[in-house]
Length: 562
Image (cartoon, rainbow, N blue to C red; front, side):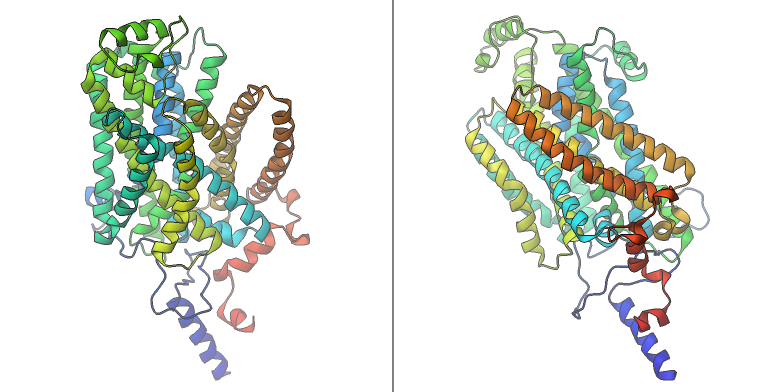
């Protein structure tokens, strides 16, 4: 008996040495490695930011400052080149009329990011790691593949955004493919800044956000938008005289703002603070400060997005190609051929947007625009790389050296980007951007459904599981977002005008909807729809996996027996 107790004690110590914590508020425990490791495996956060003690204060700016960082890194996804392009197209096509959609999408994004942060804080694991332990093998691999597609699509927009900015800054001397290579190289360099301290890395991201705010803020001041129309568009949910073009743009705004890989990213970034997960008070406090920080960060990102929408709404709404061509020709711009001599409505993208600003407001406006786009692309490329790392390591449980992991994840995302840059010129990328937005819209259920599922399970979140209000409202929001984005996909596919593509899309849709249906069933069981819980009788059910992997639900003697 004594030997058995010693064996149990040794097992417990071993589990703790390998990073397993079995306590009331640490519901999921990372699996112990079968091979002894000299030092714990680390993805990025080799050092954690200490949280100062402030007594029993209800609110402390010192603590808020200690928690500040992850939310701003997360908010960069709301400022990537794909979002900037969506903003400028919204202003050019609908004026100020869709600002309320941008505001609503940002608020929905904040609520979803709250769920992601809570999962990371309470469990000490990010979403990809929880998916690894909760889903069976085949669904898990499919889920990883779909999220990886979203990351690749986002990364292509971000890297090409940087390349376009470099092309504008160099007056066309740096071609698109060269800009992609430069971006890849400097991203590798910047990614190792955290070796000099996590806070320095976060400060660098803060600097890039500041550059964006100053650049797009400068354009805002120069253009001087109508403030009354801006406030009206932001707080009055209307869209008078709007047609299919404006409706599609509204859907595109939601698809651009709410990005699937950002949910995975935020759940990982919150692990960078030194929180005692055995202490319920500390977890509750961390959740509070992370939510405040995320609110501030997304407010800043919303303002920057408003700058871009307002600039193009004021200056270029209802402008024709002929008007722009004549003005660019009068100012001696070398890019007049971008705008055909017809009375068609002006269509802009990141590249044409910079050119038009240069024609209307001088070369300074063009170069400052390009600097803002470069900051947006560079920062979002770096956070996209972090997302790829967390997703791949979490789903596949990689234990490679850090350089090998960076090289693999970057190669997967960058290879298609480089091919596009080589075979496409900078003037013909709008169609590709629309396709990438559709691709990311299709992947949204593969982040939103899992995050609602796992934050609703008391076996995972204990006292911090979603209450009834959050379950219902979260389910409605996710259903609405997914439905809106599916509409966006349908509109895009029907515009292709190809029977072969229709048939291919139909076949893929069947497989896609089957998998989404499986995730939705799993989620409904987690939300408490017990009549659907027949998982214990199948190999694919949630009950079986919950029992296996929630190690703290098993006492030490049971572990010894197993």
